[in-house]
Length: 447
Figure 1 (cartoon, rainbow, N blue to C red):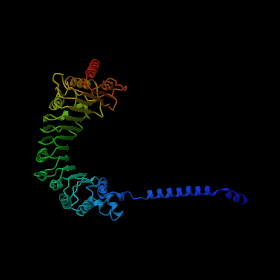
Figure 2: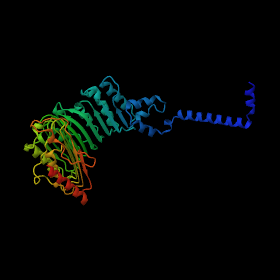
Figure 3: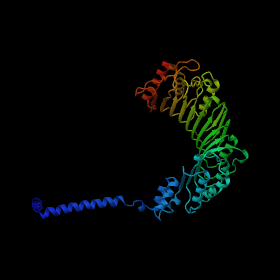
Figure 4: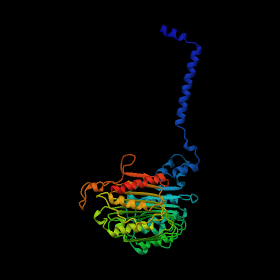
C-alpha cells in the first residue's frame, strides 16, 4: 500500500491531464461510431429516389416498407414498376385479388410503367374472366406501358389484354388455342413496339393477322409449337426472333415478307432438324444485315449427305440471306456421331458479297469442314472468321458403321494448342488474308 501511494504521487499533473485527454478522445470516437451505425441515411433521400429504388424489388417485399414510418406507409404504392414474383399465396385467385387491391388503391396521378405477373407456381390453368377483368381495367386507366405474364394459359384473357391501348411492350408466356373464333383481332395497339408470345397449336393465319394489325411493332419474339407452316408479313418489324419447337417433321413451310427486317434469330428445337423437314422456304428481307441460325439434330438417320431435300432446303435458306453482313450458323448434335452438312459444289454455293463477320459452330468432321471452306471461297468481303467445334458426347460406332475417329475435329491447332476453335480477324489486311488462304489450303490437303 505504501508503494502504490508513493507511485501515484510520482505522477505529475501534466501526465494526468494528458491521460485524461486521451480517455476523453476515445470516448468521443466510440460515440461517433455508435451514432454512425444508428444513423438513418434512407430517410434523407427524396421520395422520388426512394420510389425508384423500390421499383426494382418484388412488390411483396416493397409492401413491407409501409411499417417503417408514416412517410413510408404509401410510398411503395407509387412505384412505377410492380412485380408479383413468387408471392406465398395459397391459390391463383388470391394472387389476382391482391393485384386488384394494389391497383385499385393506386393514385391515378402515378401512372403504371410496368407490371410483371409470375403465375407458374399455380399451374397453367386458365384465369377466369370475371376475376381478371378488373385487373386489366385498372391497368388501362393507369396507362400501363409494359406487361409481362408468365406461367398461365392466357387464351381466354387475350381480348382483355389487347384492349390496353397504352401498351408499348407485351410478353405472354403461354397461349393455347381452344376456339378459333375467340382469338383476338381488330386491336390496333398503336404504341406497341415489342411483342413476345409463346404459342401452342395456334393457326398460322391467326398469327399473321395479329402481327399485321400492329402498325408500330418493331421487335417480335415468337416461340411456336404444333403448327405445320408459318407465314408472317409486316411493314414495320426490324428484329425477329423465331423459335420453332417440333418433335416431328410436320413443319414444312416458312414464309417471311418483312421489308424492314434488319436482324433475324432463327432457332429450331426438337427431334428433327429444320433443314431436314422444311420443304418450302421464301424470305423477302431486302434490308437484312444480321442472321443467327441455331439448328439441333437428334436423329442422324434422317439427315445425311445423300439426302438432297435436306441439302436443298439449307442452301435455299442461305441463299435467301446471302446479302447479310453478319452470319452465325450453329448445328448441334448432342447424342450421336456427328451431322454431315453438305452444301453442294462450290459453283452452286450462294455468294455472300457483303458478308463481313462469319461465325460457324459445327462438329468439324471432313464433310463439314469442306462445306465451310466452300463458303469461304464465296465471301470476298470477309473481315473476321470464328469457327467453333462442337464435340460429340457419345463414343462408339454410328448406325452406318463409321468409326468414332472419322467424326473428330479436322481443324488445325490454334495458338492455345487445341482445335476447339479458330478465330481470325482483320482479314481485310493482306497478311491476314494470306493466313486464311493458307489455313484453307492446309484443310483441303488434309481432307
